[in-house]
Length: 146
Image (cartoon, rainbow, N blue to C red):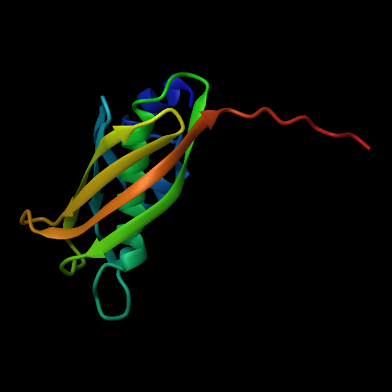
């Protein structure tokens, strides 16, 4: 992962991560195996019953952990989620501001383990998750012209 990505993604109005722009995720802090992401929950993130969709919470958790992992990589390395286990603990509603606090808990050469807690506006635990991430070199692909 290019080092300039990590510098750019923390800026207000960033454009290097389209998913963050689409959902409204902001990076509050990033570095040394930790990441804190913020997500204001507007109308577009709730399902029919008025609660923030579980997939949105899982996405926020995955992205927080992935960015904690990214902060530990050297130039020329990338990561991908191998698996993730999410626990939904209490509902989040429209208007809440979620805070995902992620940390790398073990780093091997090829696999990194991370944990996250997603908190609601009042500090209540909304979700938690654990995941493992594969780390490897950036693979360059060649265009095959026929």
